[in-house]
Each structure stands twice: as C-alpha cells, then as structure tokens.
Image (tube, rainbow, N blue to C red):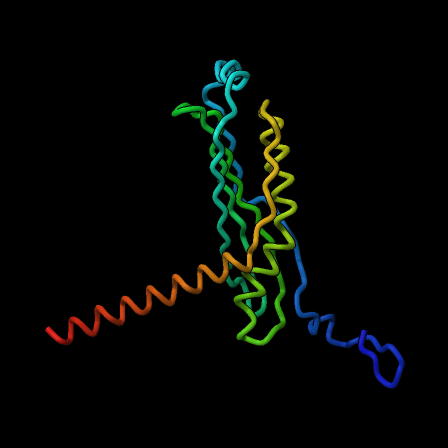
Length: 171
C-alpha cells in the first residue's frame, strides 16, 4: 500500500514495487551417503568426527526481474581417513527483484540467501539426524563477507587477465 495525504492506497500494479518478493523455495538437489554404517557407529563412540562444511551461493536470471538463488552446502564428516557421512544439499528460492541495477548483486547474493538459509540449515540437521548421527547445526553464515570475497576475487582475476594481455602485447 502507498500512503498519500495520510491515506493508504492500494498500488494498482500488483505489488511490482515491492523491492524483494519470494515466489517459492525448494530443494533442488539432495544427497546423503553413509557408506561405512553400521561399523562407523562404534568409532563415533571413541572419537568425534572432523566435519568440513563448504557453502556456496549462485544466482541465475529466469525472467526479466525473476531470479533463482541457490545455496549449496556440502558437509563431509570423517574419522581419520574414514568417511562417516557426506551430506550435499542445494536449496533454492525464486525471487522477484525490483531494485536499481547496482543493487541486484548484493540483493541476490546477500539478502536472498539470508532468507532461505534457515530452511537449508534445518534440512541438513534433519538429514544428518535421520541418518543416525548427531544433527549437524550449521553456524550462521556471513553472506556479506562471502559477497565481498567474491568481488575481490573477480577484481583480482580481471586484473591478472589485463596484465596477461598487456604482457602479450609487449612481446
């Protein structure tokens, strides 16, 4: 609703002025492997597994202002070199984004993942728990820091490619 002269008025454009709207969310891919069960359960009684977690975010356009944002998580638990479990989940959301072009990147790679991450976190906790292990509770993710790292890496890559072109011209 828009406020004009102290009165609320409904926008006649079907909500297209809302900066960020979630149209749906879903599991895009899910995999859980525990190839060494039941033997691994006795090892877990003696030693806590080392768990490595990797998180990535991808965004892809689907229509003019419609984007799919996917948060990918991979958790690998091991005791020494023996695999306890491998859990991989891609959780996605479909978002309508109505912001200025310069804000699209941060909205897609920071704001949208913040919205869908709690659902991914719950799925992973349920999956690892249902697999017979202690539920894996992922720590909150600083998607702004991930975005900044991605931007710095892209700048460094562009600079190194420029340097290579410059060196090729000098030769």
